[in-house]
Length: 487
Image 1 (cartoon, helix red, strand yellow):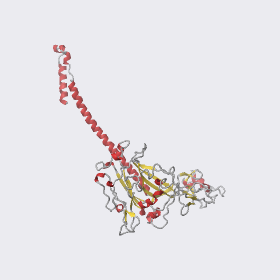
Image 2 (cartoon, rainbow, N blue to C red):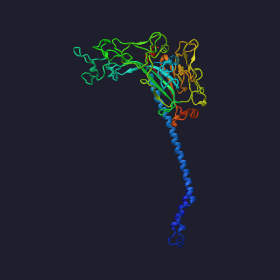
Image 3 (tube, rainbow, N blue to C red):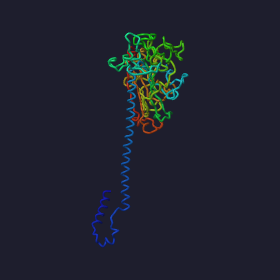
């Protein structure tokens, strides 16, 4: 190309240097004008096209590489945010359900409502639309005294810490503790904070893995999501002076209600459970400022036996309301590869970690829970191993039948009917229920982010060559629970 341009420029210089009075130039002026021939232009165009094509191919490669790396980074960041949220949530846990106890209360959970009983079915998450309960636990729930909420009975908003107070204009001198509690005046309320205390109650939290292959949504990726659901206890009525429900002069009796939000409460009108009727109908005789979520029932660990045996007896008080207690999406783009035994995790745990087939691209390191002869509960030696599981210094075994139980949830990935309706393995846990400890495992998909809408899962399976597009993350979390510490 360089030599061609030099020849062309040389010819131009020769033409320009000729004398303008030359007879030959006058006679052949038209033929002496220098320029590019058609062949030269075609060759130059071809070379330029080749250069542009090469640069364009390089640019497209850079853009595609950047797009893929961005998808990987986004997948990793969202997994990290999700697992951090779950770990923080678990710090308030008082009990975490293992596989056996979870199976015992399975029909009491929201994904079974309308299927196992006569309640309203939830269209977003139920056992018929591939939704698997993975992490279910009881935790402390805190009513912040500085927050404002509505009295159930009157509908009026009030500062939570001021709810136990009432003004008494008939006292001598006049008593105005409620006015002072809510006052912005430094004379009446010098510390500018509510007088009342914060109140701890309990809530039931459930994390689900939802397969969205048949969702057909324009809001979600239609791969898989983790959903969170919570059911809270209420804020029970009490009087700041220590008075009773009949002390209308000193106690905020007019703001008290039973859990149904009704009743002339002097004394309390019991609320009867429509579901727990045998051997006797369960009643709730408590008064509330803020009633429990519909269906909430307190779990008791005051009896004999293990925490798991007592937690297994829990039943919901009433049908849940999915209007006030909806499923909330925590993270999208979870790996939606249907589980197969080649991923590992389908053989009995032996304490050595489950090994997947190399070509599968996925390795589930925790095998199935096993049964110990003479022991009614299952356990998991792989979960006992701190390098891959939750860790256990006193594991249950044939020679130690009083040891600590650990279990994997879901118990059986290949049981698509009961244990794992989602048919997936991208969210699972190892749990030590009696010590309130869990190890959480998440796996996302970056491949699904490369197209909108994502291609079907069957057309983008994980392999040994593309497993970097399936980021994994895990964390061990410990519940700061007095119940767990006592055990």
